[in-house]
Image (cartoon, rainbow, N blue to C red; front, side):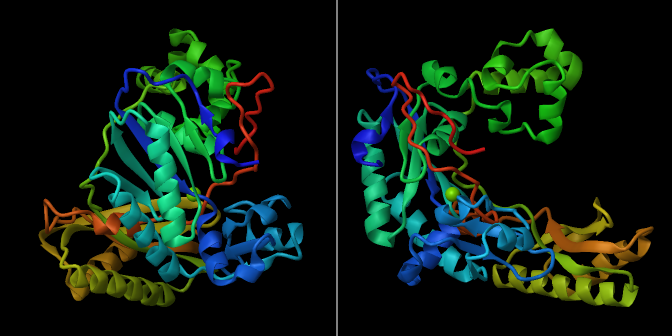
Length: 392
Ligand SMILES: [Mg+2]
């Protein structure tokens, strides 16, 4: 089903315009686990924590058939798929695997923007045979790491990212702008970045549910509900317009430690202890990487789900444990709580960059906690019987 011939090339690229590839590892956390537990291949496997509020970090494709998705509550996942093998996340292993994957990508292009543990953009330049290059990348990743990925190729980041999702898993899809709406026009507008449930609801109120409807909407009608600047941005995205620039030297400008508690906290002494321990871990990491920042931030979420952030900017940049802890505790003491606390976090922003010209090794460690929910479908974008039901 996923033979190389099944991949999708949409319109020949004759003049070889610059192209970007988006590489997205398939079911990354689970795939890393399966490498060391091959006996679990083909079985429903779920990676997730064990607390009462734990959610699924990743689900194997077999588990997805039971409706288990990333961010599903673990309790719900057990209910949906009682036979699932449940594994605790091993972030160190995922980071190590990610580093190996990104090292393979670096062999193919000097311009690689790492987006998280399992995703990256790669500049293909004006490569005349982008699909062959993508196949070579897929093959190199598989042979050097044992892991499988999907690659999307497009004229900009937006299209490349959407294309990588069209043919998952083990996908390869090249999508030119002229065919963007043919490929995804009938899909929900929520497919586009920047359209969350709220925006979806607002544009739904004026009858827009699909990407094509958004692309064709009368500008004033859209601007009336989301404002002019957002209307412009949304309509541009729906037409496949986007930036082709990659941020290769992206450095994280802030660092934080955040914790959601299994049970809401009410005792200020306990909260002080939690904040102190987070501030200490944060300071230790910053010290180790020789990074300093000026703005200490406190994040606090009250029951049921109200999140606040407070910050204080210091006179000089620091990574001193006592200074960060004191500022975090002061922010906490000044904050007026009117409900139990679900989550606390301590961060340091405005980080100074130690090495302006170096690579961005931390970018690979800033991964998001899971893979997107994806159904397994073969997409035939050129054929008559088009099936664009992948993912949500
Ligand atoms: Mg992925």
